[in-house]
Image (tube, rainbow over all chains, first blue to last red; front, side, top):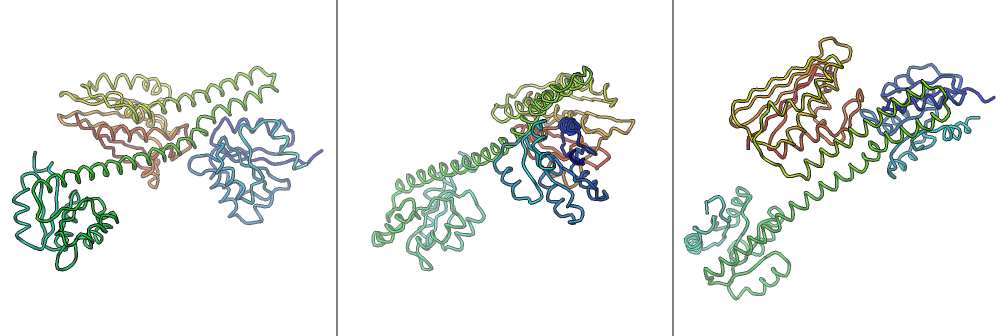
Length: 131
Length: 363
């Protein structure tokens, strides 16, 4: 049995948070799932959380009002190594914008860019990296 | 022709006699400015930005006409330059023309006919160039908006579609009927969101491409039509909605643009309410005077943070993600107001409410 994982979903769309949460729970590997519609709230959560035993996977949408996905990642990368080390970030977007995809590659903390919608299949592929 | 519409012409010559006779000959046809040295000429240009034609004598004591034209070209690129010269200077004239500094040259002694036809043609050239510059600027603006649009369209139009696809994928593994029903509700919401976006898009294009149609406006009828929709929202969300229209005088404007303005302001006022307070309200007040109409939409909702106020009229800008929005609404309002020659003021206290005041002149 693979180790359990923590999940954080950051998406301004309530619906997409719901979808992600469902899919994550379907995998049977979630120790916890937290969803945030505001990137800044997710950041506060990460900053104040005590370091966890299990790794945490973060799915973050790119286009969000107020604080977008890129701004979130930049703020995350400014956190201390101590906090950051348990996290793996995946960026999600409905955009097929080349610039966005290229930009994702520039962030060392981002593991991969995923197209929306998140599906069971896509999730399986992501989790293979954590078995 | 009124003095205002006359072509503005500047003539520089160190010989006072020439200046006087030039002005005497052309002052009825053109708005003539004269200068007997280049400093004076520059002073005129700085003061009158709409001088379209400059005529300069070639032989002047401080510098030649060609030198003068070269010197002012950077600061005043638009006026069209005509050189007046004696036959002896022909070499320098050819050079100047070839280098593109001079539109025409006129030989001394000049005939009135020569001057008149040169000025008229120079002015035509000036107008054409100016129009081209304006068109280019408009085109650049349109390109920029198209870029923004293409970017947002993938997100705002694909977003709801992808959400629905995601749910469909999920529902395939679900046999629980009540869960499937709740998924259907979610799909419905996503589709409503998409529909709303497309309607906003339609508004955008009706303002952009549509011509305004000026007609007599009865604000009582217009506001009733728009407000009927919000009566329902008002009841459902428990927001007190008051409307007051005072119009005793006729008012002329474009019906479609006014509806877009009213609709967006009300939609925002109802949308961005504070959910936790009891006495939620939206006030609509329309007052019409002989020359203008003032529309005020006031709410005690979430308000707008001060550092965002300057950006709320920008396309796709969103100050909050409390509610679903396209980032199109206020942009459309501002665009529509631009067409009607109106203006908008916003007063907002973050966490306390917002008041939009729109003033529109009667056409």
